[in-house]
Length: 134
Image (cartoon, rainbow, N blue to C red; front, side, top):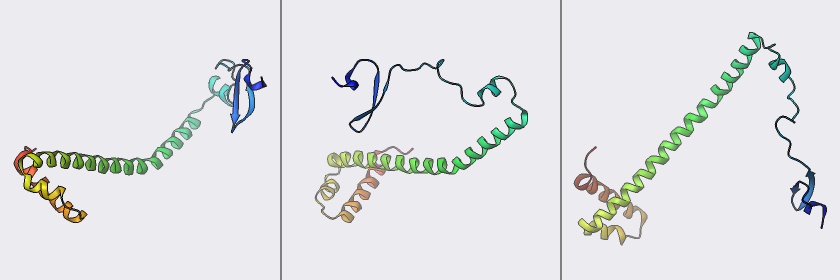
């Protein structure tokens, strides 16, 4: 058996080759403290340092706000597209039963622009005749 197959600890791999063996997993109490943590634990945090840190955090969040707004708009458009697709599928199912002529034209059309035209007609019929107004 190779050294990496021993049951003595965890082995880290990069690619197919072992790079290191960890005998034990350290617990949180065994880890070394972060540099500067003793100053915070000792109570030497000043109001100026705290204000400086809060300003930095505030600036970071101000930089992230436009990205989150763009994400929210994109998710809104995505949700609207999903809702429209669901409504179209439901409208086509209703048309297959109650408006066979439109459904037949929709299903037997090869060109995308003509199929889109019949999809619009089916949606208009569905919204007018079947779906209750909101």
